[in-house]
Structure formats: C-alpha cells, structure tokens
Amino acid sequence: MATFSILVTSAPFDSQGSNSALQFIRAAIESGHSISGVFFYQSAITNASAWQSPPADELQLHQEWLALHQAGVPLHVCATAAARRGILGADEAQAKNLSGTNLQEPVLASGLGQLMVLLNSDRLVQF
Amino acid sequence: MQSIAIINRHAPHGSSHGQEALDLALVAGSFGQEVGLFFIGDGVFQLLRQQQPETILRKNYSKTFAALEFYDINTIIVCQDSLKERGLGEDDLSVAVELLSPTALTTRLKQFQHIVSF
Amino acid sequence: MILHLLRSSPFSALDIAQSLALMDQDDGLLLMQDAVYALQGQDQPWFEQLQQRQGIYILKEDMQARGLSHCPSFIEQVDYSKFVTLTLTFDQVVTW
Image 1 (cartoon, one colour):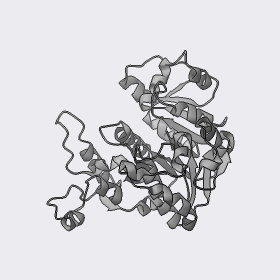
Image 2: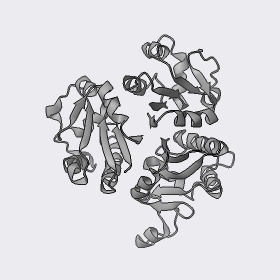
Image 3: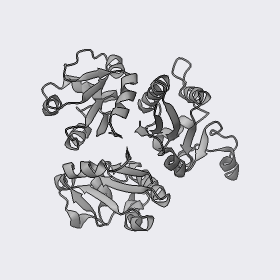
Image 4: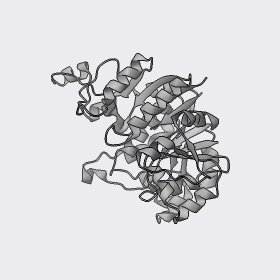
C-alpha cells in the first residue's frame, strides 16, 4: 500500500480540480492507500474557508473536506496564499482588527514548509 | 533528501502562477530540498530581462530569479523550443540557464522524485 | 516514467502539444476533466499523435459527465480506482 500527498491548486467551484481531488482521494482510501495530507495552495485556498455557503442543492465542498478529515486525512492551507485572498485564522483576523474568522480547525494554517514534509510520501498528485 | 521539480508554464503578471511557484521554490530550497526549476511554453516569459510590473500594479518578483543561487537552487532549465517559438534567445533572459531540447528536458525531469506545475 | 494528467480541452489550449512534446516512449497520458473532449478531435493533428502512442488513458467519469460515450480502442478507459493505480504504475505524475 502506498502513501499519497495531494496538492490542490485550482479554485473550488470555478474549476473541477477540487472535485477531482476529492474523488481521487476517496478512491485511494477505498483501495487501502493512505493520504499523508492535502495541501491547498494558489486559488485552491478557498477550499479552506468555513464560510463557503453554496446553494443547498449543490455540493457542500467544505463539508466534504471536513468529512475526509474525519476519516483521518490532514488538511493544510498555505497561510500566506490564504491571507492574500482574504482567508484568515482568528489570530491574524484579530491582529487586523477584523471580527470573525473563516479559517479554523481542523484545517491547519500552515507554511509551505509543511508541503515539504508532505513530499515524504510515495506520490504527490496535483489537482 | 527529497527532490522536487517545479514547472513554470504560464507567463508572469497576468496570473499569480509565477509568483507562487517562485515562493514555493524558495521555501523548498531553504528546506534543503533538491529543486529543479523548469520553464516551458509561456513560462519562458518569466525570465525576460527588464520587466517593470510596477506599471501594472504587480509585484516585481522577477528580480528574485537572480538570487536563486543563495537558496541553493542551481538547476534552472529552459525549453529551447519554447524559447525559439517565442522569438527569444538566451541573451534575452535575466539569469544563466541550461537550454535543453524537450527530450533532454524530460530526461532531467525524471531525476526528480516529485513534479509540480504552475 | 511520467504520467501526464491533461485537464484542458485540446481545442482551446496548447497543453496537449506541450505534454506530447515532453513524452518518452514509456510515459503515459490521462485525459481528464475538459481534456476528454479530445475524443472529438479525429481530424486534428494531435489526435494522430495520440493514436501513435502507447499509454493513452481517459477518465470514464469525466466522459460520462460530458455526454461522451464513443472511445476508440487505442485509448484505455479508466475509473478513479484505476487512475489511482496508474499513478503508482508510473514513477511521477505531472498535471497540465
């Protein structure tokens, strides 16, 4: 059995990339492989937003990621790429005098260094 | 030691691909990873001299290419066909690169454990 | 051995030409997302290049989603489970 790390760089909803990533990860887990982690970078960082609110009859993508986390898949987002695009954890929001936060656990605000740690797996697949 | 090849395939400034690929390269370099930077297709435009993206309110990250060696990134490979197709030569580029044919470039790409593209 | 993941329609992007230019004999190509429209390119120059190669795959789910059903025999149809297996059959994966 192999270990996979998943790098998601395409924007959720705007492109199919996040959906493909979800389906790939589910298939990998079903085949008995393990996922070392998912790392959201570039426009994919909005996957991390807890404020994602699609219409009720559409895929609740953020919830799908949380379900994967429940199944043992660590979720990371590049904190710099996220902050650039308005996705902020509580501490950063407070530092900017902003009320509320759209980046919260179990999604971890990580540095790109975390992606280097994830390279320590058999395959890296980018979506 | 892990190794990572980073393919640049988009032109700079019109999108964020180049800047975030470079951010990743610098972190990978400072984490002691073996890094290969590859420029293919429109990605070769990243390396043009005398870019002035300030005029379009974008960050001038192209200056950073000259500093790559300080991050222990010494493998900078450009697809010679892509360069030629775009009316460019080695003299138009801001840093010293290895110019390779697509076949030779692929051989080098395969020496890296993981490949990402931007 | 590299597995190339092609995501854009070959009718609108040069990604297909770039990935084909970089492919060795033993490399593979998976048509996924909008790249599955490659099936409609019988008269296109890149289609002939695909035809001359081994290791061309297409993601069934992405075909079905787009109303495509006819697939020539030189392209192997795979589902997500086989897609996962393919990424392990090859040494590296690159996404276009």
